[in-house]
Image (cartoon, rainbow, N blue to C red):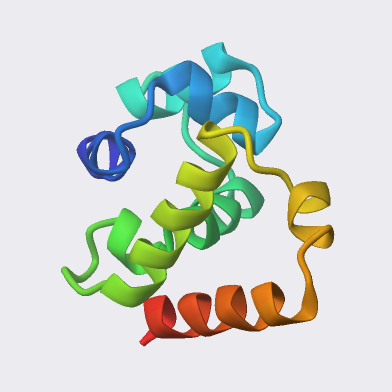
Length: 110
């Protein structure tokens, strides 16, 4: 599982500290999970799976499948945050801009 967490994090070009901040946990906690020093509890495992857009089974290496569209979508949302675009910025969009943005997000989910 530890290698899978590292692979998913690096696949999104994130540092452990950045990911921990996004998950609202201590960076040492995530570091312990990724190194295998501490086991991830079930609740946090579900949160990680949702965050990365994969199944819990995928993180646990019970199968090799994951939904690439969810992963791409999550990567896009993280990119927005990393570039300083917040939900309040998106709230100021015109209706035409909102529709274009919504269409873009729908296409990313396909």
